[in-house]
Length: 297
DNA sequence: CACTTGACCTGTCCGC
DNA sequence: TGCGGACAGGTCAAGT
Image (cartoon, rainbow, N blue to C red; front, side):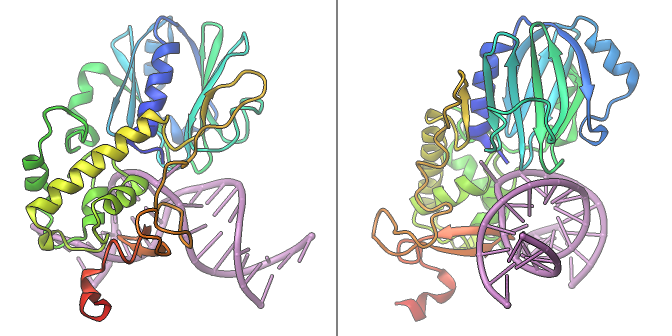
């Protein structure tokens, strides 16, 4: 899915467009992706005004004047596309081409009708969801409450990171980074990118890392997340004026989906393997596998 | 308990 | 060109 930088990119874009607009109606094309009691729908649809667009981890939150919020998880293939009647269009999320096509399309699951515009929730694989929750209740819900800290939060320290990681001694560093209860918002791309930055093999067990290595890893993670947010996420995103220019999809990646290409640091061919059940990219020279260290050196 | 694997869906790409 | 299988940026329940 969109990971933290992608969801943040969407948040920034929608925060420019949505606040102040009123919700006129909701068109649910796939029940599975927006399950809510009929009474609840009415209670927020009736003239609700959009107040604010927030993010927590990979979750997007749209606060409404009715004190309800739309809580959105895009999972793997979700995307949000804003289409104004005057032709302005903004979309981000999964990199498919619905920035230029007619909406709703085959992947559209929910259409939120607004003043002079529509917000489309598209999701090819139907893993994503929208939930309607009382705003005050959001901090209490399970999937929010158990999330780890935001990696870019000012008050998130290396010490905190080390303590949290150390609770997963027997798992790979890759699995630990992907675990949303350890740290929130990191997915497959930024796991691979930050491990490359810190010169750590993804399969290294947490217990085999030094505190210094974990601290370095956090620095690399913050760097790749910030870089990605600055480049608008590794996803198509744009205000599309007539000819829909593409976003900077993965232009900055150094190992992710670059198997067979050369490591930008040492020129060795990047490999792809499987760690923690996920496709995993790494440089076999910069990131030596601790399990085969003797054989390799 | 700690950790890993399968399932959820649909689309695409790759090898025969 | 057609078909089967593996795989896809996520997360949970069920399994070991």
